[in-house]
Amino acid sequence: MKTESRYEIILYWSDEDHAFIAEVPELPGCAADGRTYAEALANAERVIDEWIEVATELNRPIPKPRGRLKYA
Image (cartoon, rainbow, N blue to C red):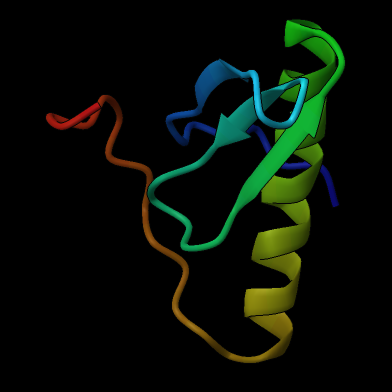
């Protein structure tokens, strides 16, 4: 299931992890990493789809994308 995600993704470098981190604040616990910025972004897009798939299977609510968040 490939969705056209519109969730905000926050990308940053983590010295501790030696990787780029991609967090999706609107989906609790949804994050990914990668050796490059592009890899972290691609992994985040895959994880968003997986997050939505699992939430659907468990009949949990799926937040609607809100776009740019004020605190980001």
